[in-house]
Image 1 (tube, rainbow, N blue to C red):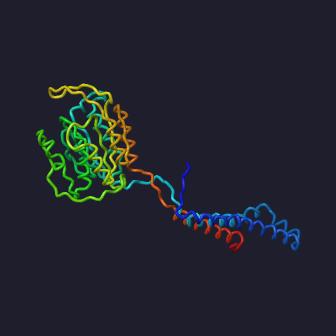
Image 2 (tube, rainbow, N blue to C red; image 1 turned 120 degrees about the horizontal axis):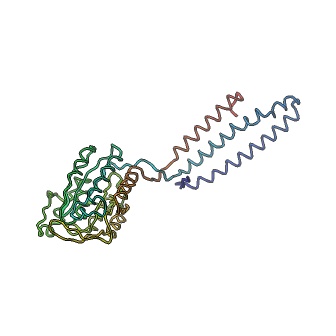
Length: 350
């Protein structure tokens, strides 16, 4: 596996030319020493010096020293490598669709049960130090479980899902953000007032004092992420892309998971007949705007695999990391080993 390297001070790489120069000097000294030995030493001494047992030993300390010097010179150039490291993600918000369309059976046994089972399997795979909160959304969005380390409480909350009408995808993102930033004054009711209130939809949010926010680069907030699972299109609540912009401005990634069929199907719910289809384009745009990823889960098995992928994606991430200290440590080990072997074999450091 190749690990690409970049250097903060690449001009220091010119110093690596010292290594081949020292190697040439070393070979020159060997030849000079060999000529001197032949000229002045007895035949027995020369034969002993050229014996196979000591021939390779005398080269080991100098080679180790040159390797140590190479590592030190590389460290001086401050190299960066892209490594897979444990994520700093401490909070994950699961925003799960509980609209009536989730009763469709194109994902066995139905979309809701499949999403519940996959979510519980996802929780089992997460490291225990990661907090998880759950937001359920249909005509509005509400927190059914605040971020917690208790997997048992999360499972209980998931099992209590009840289907409702309409789909407020944008509201789910806003409520999730309010859980991630409880002191930011993010107020869902003020955003939907005048639209959903007129339709008789109750908003379970207390008004908060709005606070000014300075936008940060999308995807730059590494302490939390949102996983949004839905099978339909927004029919009410905050505009989805407006909510996505709020997440992007706060650096929070919104990973979107689409369940069901793109073509859609007609289902019945509480005496109503409706046609539901997956709005993939919007979900892809939400993920793209927040520097996250979109996943399509057309079957229960695919949905489980999506959550497995997300578990890995959120607990291990690739980061560009400076490795100067590692190279300096390697140089110290090689230099110490070189000096130690020289003392052990020849009673001198040379």
